[in-house]
Length: 209
Image 1 (cartoon, rainbow, N blue to C red):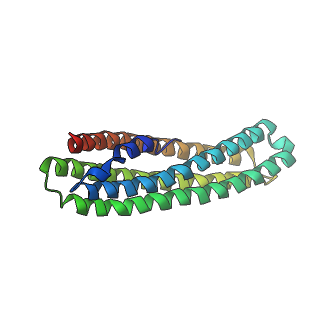
Image 2: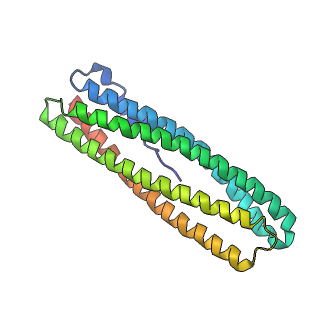
Image 3: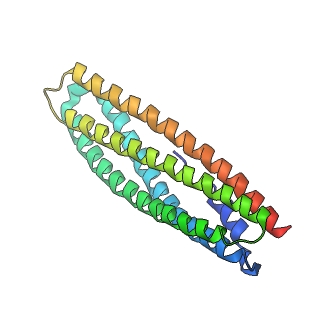
């Protein structure tokens, strides 16, 4: 799932802020946020790679079926290790976003000190959208953590020779339902990100006109 795909354009918008005066503090704070999110984007890239590896293992397990229990057991153990790696990776992503989230309060304080009313109004709008975006991310993070927990339970079931098809099917359905929630949360985050991009461009236009 792609998130933070807006960062390159965002950083380019902020690249010339050294020429500014009163607005410089605001844009400098926004650059700090962008740096934190760049870190989050790097963690997400690694997370995506782990997800792809795990998907391949899952497809293999489903192709074997429980009749080839030894193979399924081994692959499920490897999958559990990947779940643990993903958990560590998403925590790094979350830590970076929380740092950016704290920085938005500094931006809000600096915005209140702006004298140009047009710039101030647009900056306030930008901050409000970004705060909402971080709330959306927090929701996404909780859904992801829940999915990891459900996946862990699934792979433990696959290591138990006595797991019934009914038990297995029920757990797969739980994982799939959680994945739907995760996809929906990710879509909301992308929508919030698009709104933020548009408002950032407007702010840049007002400052540089």
